[in-house]
Image (cartoon, rainbow, N blue to C red; front, side):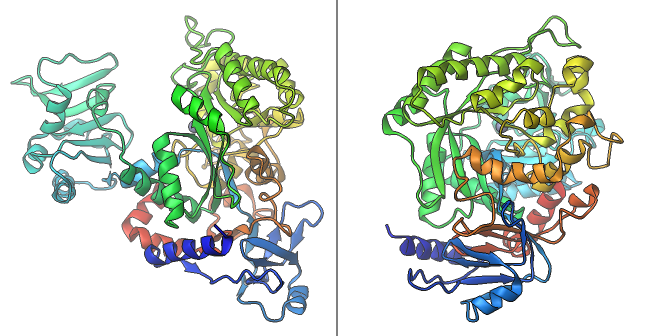
Length: 584
Ligand SMILES: [Zn+2]
């Protein structure tokens, strides 16, 4: 397929359903060097060391044609197809989030949003409306009712069940501590008055009859949640499309999706061919799924010449999370001396997949939180790299690299292993992380500075939707190690802070390197993709707290398609856009 056709097809797709998107018609005449678009009067932070700043950018097709001053631009290109005066706004290279879960964000966007609805009746009304357009038996899923506020007087499922007798309903609370299920959902899950409370969970019951009221606390939610059928292709596509738009609205131009199923791969392909995927995706296959691994190793990587969807890596999980004490530590937890956490994939298996992946031209990205898990993954990678010396540029990745034994830190650079880290994890976890680890180990937890100084590659990311997808929160956390209110004063283990330049590099140059795209993405220079994030304030000049409120004005994702956040908000419907913004 030639590129002009692809571009026009993509543009048609956008036009048909994004009324708020603007797009330019593109002429891809190879002879002409006249730009399709000339951006003027901007403060361009290029992240290109040879030309760190500029005021104007010319683009042609999906590429950057030229970067320089506004005066020079006007002289060189007197008649561009289109000119845009940016009135002093700041232009950054398109922001790349190197570890995301679009599908989970999508799931929350397709579910009924019940946040800020104060009244039980109103919630039931919304559920009823949704059920009216759903097939009989289809699950109605929602989230966001405030279980904290309603705790003293939880609703029962009577009115809810009467309003929706034919559809199972499952509404998760805002803080996910409680869920509200109707009778149909309880029946399908086999939850009745004889069902015992599970460990760490409680089924609320009617005082007189002992029947479940429909409110399930903590792990009792799983009794019903596990009965919810997996997403269909149509649901996955809708969810991922909504999530992708949300990303672009927040200034992201590429994401590294940390685990995709075959259904998601199909959904991505279909969205792309329909012109409904405004975001570039670097997808990691599920390395724990034997069928997926065998099939893809046979087939080989799928490297997209148009840089829209590339599949050339596998995701593994070496351990769990620190908060739930599932992270594998070398020594026991400081606040639970009886446990060291759990390895979920043994070193031998990480080694084996890595060796096979390297032979077939794939990268491996392994989740490792605890110091034992990190050491084990580094050991496995080291052995596999030795075994496959032909893989001269494997760029193996550790996702999170959260708690490291100091002696393991230099091994990242030595082995060429990428440390893919998340600044907001530190600021979300700092309230309790030191309790789990004790003061000594905490020194090398979320240790960006030590990792960076050891010479390792350090792409940064959000891990949304667990954390906000707003990249400015990540940049702020990376340079302050403080929460949004500025606590703790001076920052938590401030010696591990990054500079602003290093933080920006993490979301641009380094993230591009982590997906083998450094010659196409990550900086604003001639020949690279025209992926640009235009923001209202100059991030290099403002005090850190102001970074949190930086507005994204426009996001360009090559293809000469650009998106205005305000327009996109309109497209999602004002109330949705509003609530998402508040959530962020
Ligand atoms: Zn993740």
